[in-house]
Length: 197
Image (cartoon, rainbow, N blue to C red; front, side, top):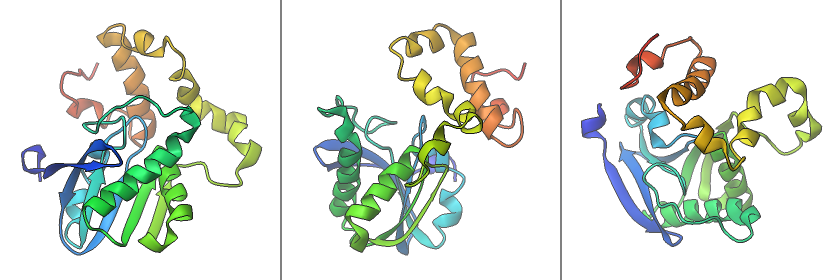
């Protein structure tokens, strides 16, 4: 399956236009991405999962091709809004019960959805996430050195600093792709417009 054959679709959910990719047949399985990702992070998983499941991979509010409205007022309501986006999307598509897989930011949404709508889930899997009860361990030095980018990206000047030119963008994103890819440079060579040097 290549980009030319992806089933890109859109629907209205919770007051916004939501983009998603959908493939396969069987039990519905929703995959939620993390930050700073969109549906494409699951591109290697979708073909294999679609052999047994009806796989639905949305772009969360503010990501990818899904609508990007302003933050709710107060911004602390965002998690609840994302939960209702997921409910609205699955309602619009007629999914009564479904499996839910998520990581990073998507795992926050998945956990909150499971607490509010447990009857909707056939199964729940999440990884790369903070979970209830982690407490102060989240701030331990070994943890903080892995999540520094979350505070960095909340600074009003972060986008202009990282986006200053191609070299700064390359340095910033290369860190994440090399650090988390499991094998240094494994993703860089297939990224259009990037050199391997």
